[in-house]
Amino acid sequence: MRDIITLACSECKERNYTTTRNKKTMTEKLELKKFCPSCRKHTPHKETK
Image (cartoon, rainbow, N blue to C red; front, side):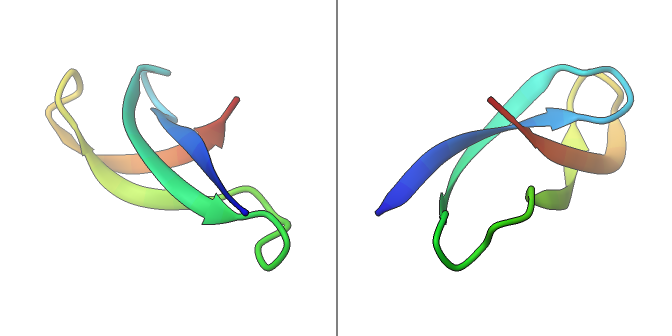
């Protein structure tokens, strides 16, 4: 039931990370603070398609 999702940087829109989430328990979009190699700083990364 877990689906693979891609996380994109909110500043440069580059897709840097993949992770999994359960769609039944987490209905809202995932947002995590991760390191972006192109921005070279920690930025919020949002779930994309």
